[in-house]
Length: 180
Image 1 (cartoon, rainbow, N blue to C red):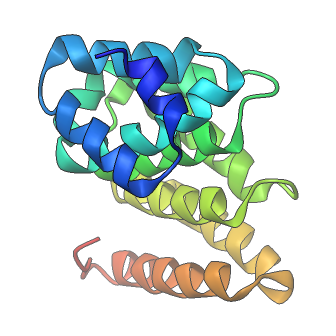
Image 2 (cartoon, one colour):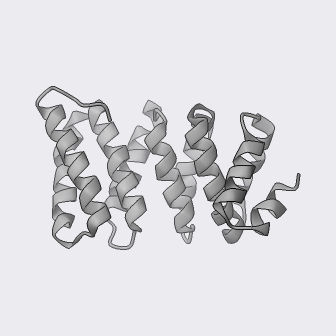
């Protein structure tokens, strides 16, 4: 299969799911997909993002080896919002290695604080940061402050996720973490 041609042929959930099934757990196919996601042209990377997201949700452990590349890609100027959204979505479902924890933390705080980041990127970043706070409790106060600073101006999606994350942060402080 010519994966790039298939990605560009149709932008739909149905096509993204079909391609994610085709990739499955095959490392060669996953490498093809990730090459297009990480190094493809703007439109190709955008189209690959949906398939990456579905594949990572089904097989998160396969994506650990790509985390550093994904975090670096997210920092490139002009990267499509779909790429950023997919990276932080994947970060929600994987255990972030210690050597990438600082980079992931900084990127998620930058996205959460950004006035230009899409709501989905901010919400996924909140969730990733909440998971990081479980490992690095000293970041909890900063996360709470960044969230609370934005609440008065936030839309419903942001407020809903913020409520969930703030409740989780309180449970961590009280020593009774809920599953998150």
